[in-house]
Every structure is written in C-alpha cells, then in structure tokens.
Image (cartoon, rainbow, N blue to C red; front, side, top):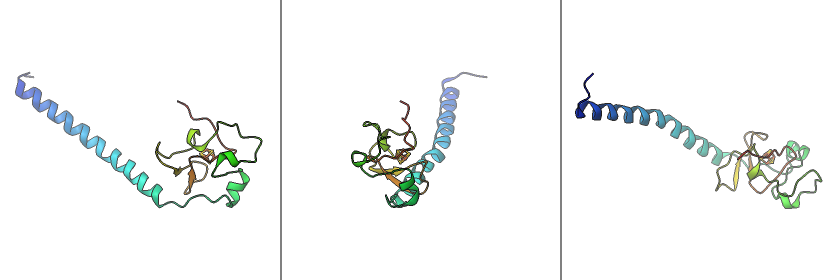
Length: 112
Ligand code: SF4
C-alpha cells in the first residue's frame, strides 16, 4: 500500500469518521438518559421501599444509627446522577430520583 501524504490523510479522515460514527450513539444514549432522568419523579420519604431502607432527602437528619457521618447519596455506588445534579437516579429505587444529600441503608461507598 502506498504511503503518500494523500493516502495518509484519507486514512486519517476515515478513522475520524469511524470514531465520530461510533461516538454519536453513545452521546445520544447519555443525552437520552439525562432527558429520562429529568422526567422521573422524586422519591418520596413516605414511599414504602424508602421507609424500609430508612431513606431521607437530607442525610444529616437521618435517625438511623447505621449511617456513617460521611455517607451520602452522592458518594454511594448506586447514585447515577451527574456531579452537578441535586437529584439523580439510583439503582436501588428504579424510576425515581434521590437527593444527592440523601442517604439510605443500602448505601455503599463509591469507588474512586
Ligand atoms: Fe442514596 Fe445510595 Fe441509598 Fe440510592 S442506595 S438512596 S444513592 S444511599
């Protein structure tokens, strides 16, 4: 295969096109996920599952002796909100948003 500058630039263009084509669906999924999250209702503290797991919107107001003082939804491995989202999805309460400053007894430290 020839390695003329024209061939190299064509190869680079093809690579860029493939990379862009691969990134588009991923970007759409991220945007779709954020749009879907924005449509979700907030979890109520009165929800039976929330009560079963001692969920509170404000972890500082938790009455549970199981809560460590540095445990919040925002540093829980189950929290799926973005770093600037006050409310975000949680694996434990599918279809509902939890408060980043909240807590429940399913809390598990996020890695990293
Ligand atoms: Fe918050 Fe984690 Fe409980 Fe979900 S599992 S409500 S993110 S503490």
